[in-house]
Image 1 (cartoon, rainbow, N blue to C red):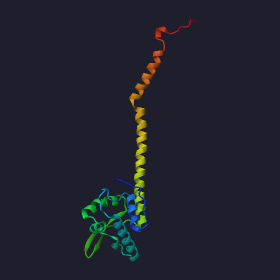
Image 2: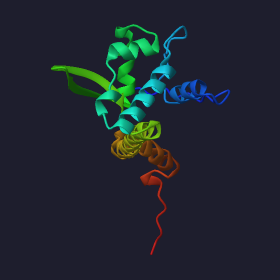
Image 3: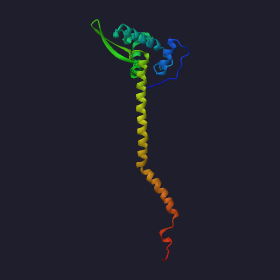
Image 4: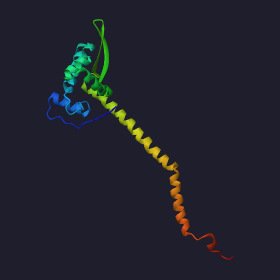
Amino acid sequence: MEFLLDHKEPINNNSQELATALLARFGLLPRKKDGAAQFHTLLLELYERKKEANRDKRPESAIMPVEEMALHASIKRQTMYDHLRRWLDLQIIKKTSFVSGGKVIIGYELNGTNLESAFRKAESTIKAHMDASFRIIENLQNEVKKEKLRKPSGASNSDEHSNQQDSSLPEPDETFHQDA
């Protein structure tokens, strides 16, 4: 999983600009500079479908096949598959299947009742990733401490230090003897 979060602020408050800023902040925009994908329109369509499905109590209407997702994003189907991984990794969308006219339709839908709940799932995914990263940091710190304690070169440094102190001491035959 790779997260490239961007600190983008919306220029104005229209839905397309807000959706674009949101996608940028979660690292869901195309990574290539010349990427022409219109993911903000896809996100808005997924949201509208989810609202309609909840209102009409028809959950299958929230599901969108990849081909249709690609059309909304103005990209090719294969390119959409390439981008889906990031959306799925963050759990903003989920893969779903349903039967329609005797055929099984596989598609994707917003993973929550609305945009906020879908992005809260992304937040918990990122938080879990960060928590795991901090556990690795703790393990690294502990391992570095253990290695320093076990390291024989630390002993050789103390041997060199003790040799320097010994050289300032008189030789055994030069020791001072006090007569009793």
